[in-house]
Length: 106
Image 1 (tube, one colour):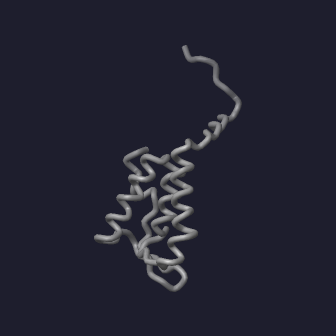
Image 2: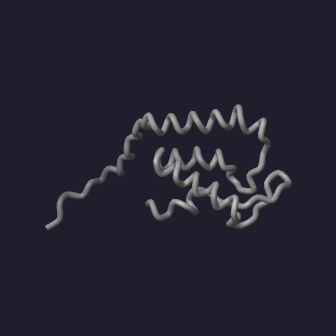
Image 3: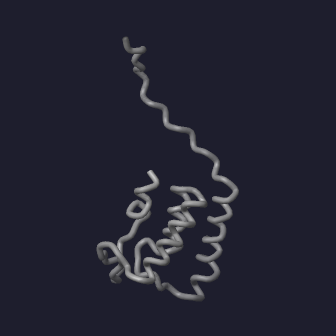
């Protein structure tokens, strides 16, 4: 015999507060974006760029996995960019979103 069936729609899970390490990682990336990247210039052949990818990975997977995914992305971006080519603002970029690299974490 089955239990009662709920007629109410599923309630969304409450958002958890980001951890201190997650916030610190985001601040570090924002610092890079605001102060270092403008001096260094744009060099990422991928979309999203390395720092934008880092923010997305940290937001999605937390500081620990987000930082590891970002480091992995930076390493494989330097060796051999992978992914389909998209044209963004007149420049060809390799489309390499977080979802292409974190499938094994879900």
